[in-house]
Length: 93
Image: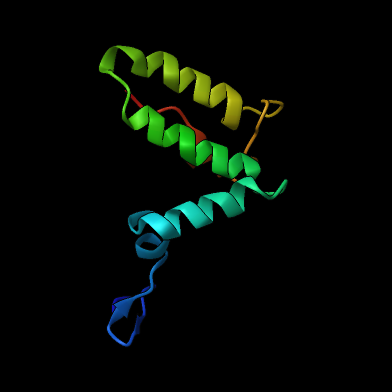
């Protein structure tokens, strides 16, 4: 199996497969994140990123600004301090 991914009786067990691609796994993992004070901001960020991906082009800049202030700015309402500076930097260009 490729690095970071194992096979269990022929069934893929990667995080992406279990918690992103499988609807029930995704739902359960999101509920886990949202149900924990420690991980609630991560769950909210995930939901907002998915909503952002569905935005019309005209709405993207305002939506990105809102995401950055809410999740990426120290003191933001749901600051995700566990993210690296590279992950939270505005895109170049």
